[in-house]
Image (cartoon, rainbow, N blue to C red; front, side):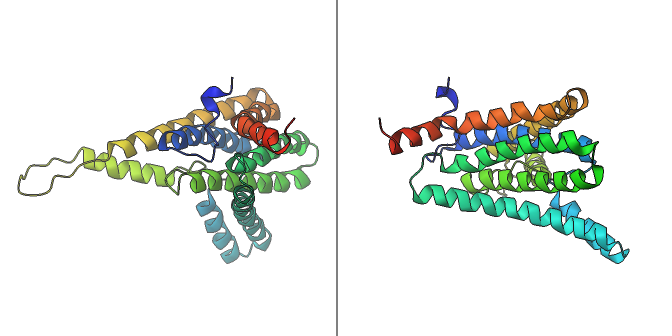
Length: 246
C-alpha cells in the first residue's frame, strides 16, 4: 500500500515527486486554513495580512491586538525554523525520513488543534489565541518543508505568489507575436501546469476543510493528520529497520 507514495518524502527527489508532495500539502494547507477560519475567525497562513494588521493596530493604539499579530508572526517563523532544524538533523544522520520529520510534527499539531478546537466554546479567551498560534506554527512548518525540498520552486500554504506567476505565464501564453523580427514571447507551460495544479489542490482542500469543520467539527483534523503520517511512514519504517536490525 505504500509503494505509490513511498517516494513523496524520500531524500531522493525528482520534480515529479516534488509536485505530488506539494499537491498533497496544498490540499492539507487549504483544509487547515479554511477550517481554522471557521474555528477562530482568522486565516493563519497570510503573514502579509498579519504584518499589515500589526502596523494598523500600532497606529490605532491597539497594542494588545498588535502584540497578538507579532505573536502569530513569530509562531509562523518558529514553524519554519523548526523545519530547518529537523531536516538538517535528519540529514546529518542519513535518515531517509529527514524530510518527513516536520510532517510527523505537523500531524501531531493538527491533532492538538482538534483538541483546542473542542475547548474553544468552553474557554474562548484562552483557547482562541493558542489555536491561532498553533495554526500559524503549522503553516510555517509545512511551507518550509516543501520550500526546502523543492529549492523554493513550490510553496503550499498561500497562493498569492502562485497566482502571480500563473498570471505572468498566462499573459505570455495569450500574447500575440505579430512581429517576426523579434524573439517570440513564449509561456512556460510546465509552470502553468504546476501552479494551476497547486491552486486547485489548495481550493479543493479549502472546500473540504470548510465542509468538514462545518458539519463534523474539529474531528476533521484526524484524516488530515493521518494523511501526513501516511506520507512519511514508509521512509520512517525503513530508518527504523536500518537502525534496529532484527
